[in-house]
Image 1 (cartoon, rainbow, N blue to C red):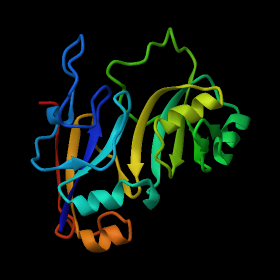
Image 2: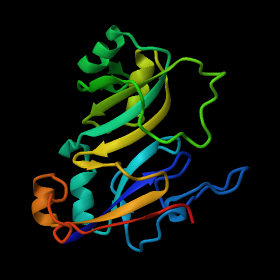
Image 3: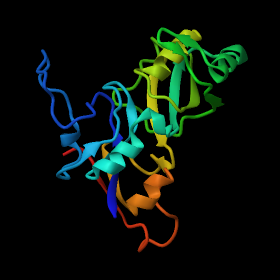
Length: 213
């Protein structure tokens, strides 16, 4: 049995429990501001200016099987971009684009009429960004700021980025700063790179907590 914690990381929060830099505005928000479970570590990360699903666990083997790019856990993002991408731009993302560190693998991309997400705090300024489009984009790589670089490459810079899924685990039902715990049968689940089993709560205990402290 292993515990996996699904956290909705807020905007402008570090994907770590301490801030080693004390800038002009003081220390930045960290995971310690929203989750106080001892002995857990994030499986992967999200940039300071990105939001959404972050997985944490106290099981090092589980973290090792979730986070490395070679395990190809697909990651799905909802991305608000500048302007209105045409079909040519979307097809370029689906085919793969040439970045400074090589070609990306093909991505799954679709337009969204609505994001289905809570508004960011602080929100985008509509005067600076009068025309935006939401996309849902799934990739199986883990390059630095990859999604942002991909959308910029096709002429539509990313304004907001929210990760909504990692493999079978989804952000559903979590507001920014909230988290929930799921108990996995780790040896079998991680070998199959699948999430918790479906079924009664006695087979997949969950606990939802959260909010900034």
